[in-house]
Image (cartoon, rainbow, N blue to C red; front, side):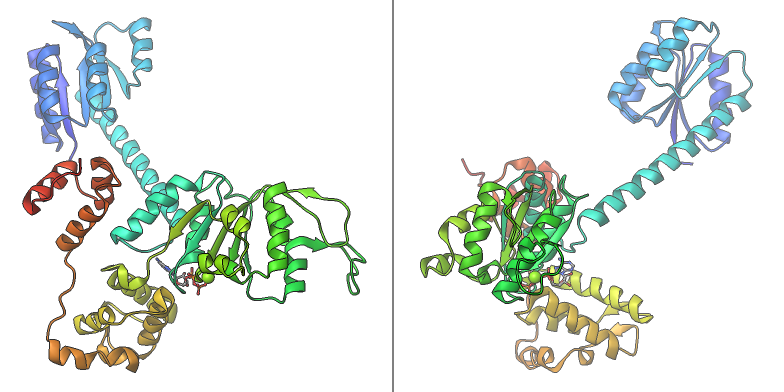
Length: 449
Ligand SMILES: Nc1ncnc2c1ncn2[C@@H]1O[C@H](COP(=O)(O)OP(=O)(O)OP(=O)(O)O)[C@@H](O)[C@H]1O
Ligand SMILES: [Mg+2]
């Protein structure tokens, strides 16, 4: 039993006997005869559970309990008294004590009360842990521990619940759609639809009827009404993928939706109000497209209230390794194989590759490797030839210097210290402010004024 306990009672005999009894039961016990000594000892050890006699020689046990709760809001309190009264019972309820035991009692009673209390706490902790896990799973199925990805998580958390439109920029396979979903899932719109539309996948007229819908008779073949995707997404999020490929005529129509917040199905004279958040994505240079008059400037500014750059995989340091292991486990489960690790030489090859197809490419490479792997370890020969061609490089270079966590941290501090305060920097690095201060000192990095 790891729980640390404090018994506070002025009766020396009872206090000592009860302490001995509970020690024998496996608890870690301290005791104090009065209010003052109890407070002193509590502030040094912050016990998990306190058993307090209400009538103390130098003060009120209930007041002691509330002072202790102030020091540790999670403390569990059991009160004992020789003089039960309604007023003390009411006070006890107010400060949320776990049990209220009247003297004289047998020690067994305290033991039973403690076991119930510990069981309840364990269940609560388990529930909380499960809840946290589920929340995490739901909001961020995005793997990554690099500074860049942590910064993106922070940014997403900040913007998710705002109504602003977002433009996601990033090379192919960097996870633009995944991030779009994460924004939706972290927002108040999450119970409403997330509708993804690929602007490059359909010819212009089909795309228009997909987006806006139509009424019966709008054109030959329109035999019934059909709801458009923008109407289906009402209250939720519209993800416009490959927005750079949206034809100019549709750009004008989309602009009207953004300005008037209403849509009109093809062939209809009635407009319908819609409440939408737009997240767009492209791997094209939209500013260049605006300059070349291929993309409307007014639409660009409407869609691009907040821009998020998703970094390519080759700039995410150790995430290559983390993602590779993640995909290995995923595909091993799917294919019913017992795979445990990736050989260090194979990892080096993964680091050496530049990953033009980013995470999607890595996912495919690992899937293939899992198929070919015959042991519990992914070996260099399980990787595709084009990735292995880097092996020749190793023969010459022998060792590839990987960016260590220390180097990464240093780079991060230098890069972002002017943008974030000390606490934010420390939080994003997952270290304390003191540790941050020590690192600065070690590396001679002064704080920006
Ligand atoms: N950080 C990540 N963790 C886990 N899986 C990821 C991550 N990033 C991307 N993926 C996976 O990689 C694949 C590609 O991601 P996604 O489709 O979101 O990329 P994209 O940027 O939209 O690509 P494209 O530009 O080609 O449309 C998906 O299967 C996605 O689940
Ligand atoms: Mg995509």
